[in-house]
Length: 146
Image (spheres, rainbow, N blue to C red):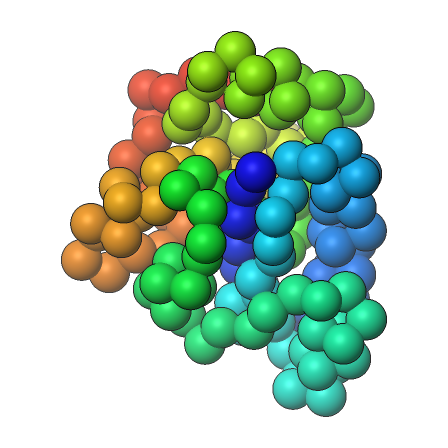
């Protein structure tokens, strides 16, 4: 099972969307825990924590330290999965798949769709100052999942 880290800035309203999306993966038994990094007003974060059971972390580095799974799914709060993403993720994991880039839906002419990473906790922790952009760069040649 995966530990999921949702990286947000001041996007409280987007957190609701990504947390709802993660529910389907949790029902399939793919998700062990969710940690929110950043994300807006503290009162909103506390409500989300109480309602969803998600943990809160001040930084990605802190979230990496408290993650309990060896494999992490790190997503931006504005990530919108492609149709069939849970099935693709489950198939990848059952097939022994490890690290991958998680391609999202959306984007546009000049803006790439938000994407995340499926990465080993040890590899993410080894980065001096981990952030989602560095994690993506670290996996630039990895398999892409939708």
